[in-house]
Amino acid sequence: MAQTLEFNVSGMTCDHCVRSVTNAVSEIAGVSDTKVSLDEKKAVVQGENLDPKAIIAAIEEEGYEATLT
Image 1: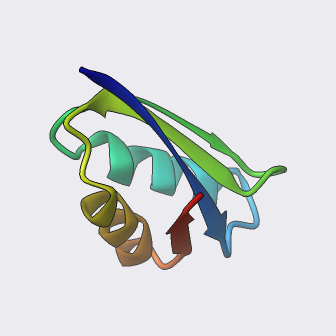
Image 2: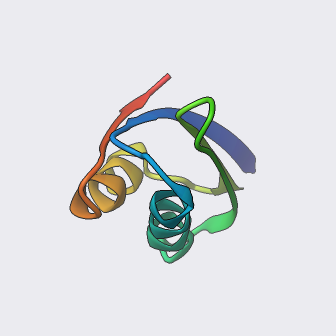
Image 3: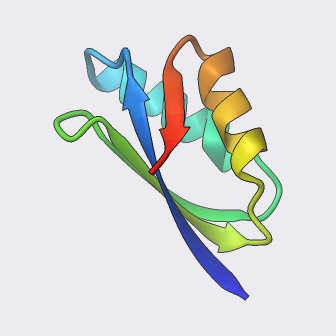
């Protein structure tokens, strides 16, 4: 079943940050689409059987803070 999860992401300051978060999240199993907004400080992740903890861990590994909204 398709899921959509939204995360608040803090610490992003530029387009490079957006690409880093997008690439990290896109590598997680089950993720089919990731949209990261610098202006809104959010990441919207779509996919199957998503693991919010794994997504948060991937974002934090890139140096940003994330919480599920």
